Length: 453
Image: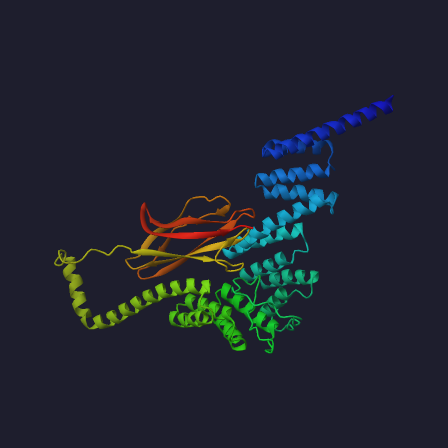
């Protein structure tokens, strides 16, 4: 009799557990995530080893964008059944979520947050080579070479031939041996590599020409590490070495122009862009960079003219002093012009660190690069605004910190934008506005081209 009672109680508990699980799935299907979580948790109180309930709980937390609790749920399921199809699929989804968040933080130079994101991706998949590599780059951004080397060596324990990490280690420690050369040549690319996480080097198509692509890849890898960390002399030297080794590649000229623009060597930057466009006249990244260089070059020329004007005015310094004294007594109050207000303009380009195709692809993170120039007096307490405030399938947040643009100066700001994996192809008109208090100082329209899968 007691045996029958125990059997009845077991069957009753199993039925109740299954009932909560079914209710959780029903609520999950209707996107009522809070109710789904409640029933999955009740099922797990009755059966802590219920793998499907752990997976359902993970999906419900994902529906609420609660990645931390979702990760905790799927890690529990993985301890119980590491090879279950649902568990492996959810781990892959979450590791990609953490990886893309880490890349967003890395591109925004939030290196500490990037390290944490890549660490969580690795916790879900210890063999995730791209995450180990990106974590090494993030530690490099923090100037923590010891941790950068540890992260890179963790990747090499998984794949001792992983070329990007081998090249990165050679960059931070030139005493290491060079990576082994690849057996085959990579296919030429129409777009330049934009991050050190994935680098493609263009090579001529002639079958008879011998090119050490591994050495070229290493040179570009090193240059981009230096460029991303604002080590401009080192980046220039590495890019020039690459151009000398392979003068037919467009990407090194493009990146060298970027390097020159950052140090305001606009003439040299224009020269490199001209070379790139002679090689490929429709090369979109070079065309976009050329517009920015032209604008900044004009501003620099204006500053140079102002310097010459100041030198001419030195002989009349005594008269200027006399003028100041006269001004204090109000002699010139009726003749002096009013202070020239700020005259701010903004140029918008798209930085596409993954493939530089001018689109934001599904699952990709890009950055809107804003170059603000000011032809008037110093513009203070400026804020940025992006309209519309939200776009379906895109995630972005405009920085709310104020900043200033000096007279005849320029500032660069970037807005990271991440596209959902299921986003559809379309073109979205956006508007970038620059505010000072409640006044709009500049507006720029931009067509954001979205490419779905």
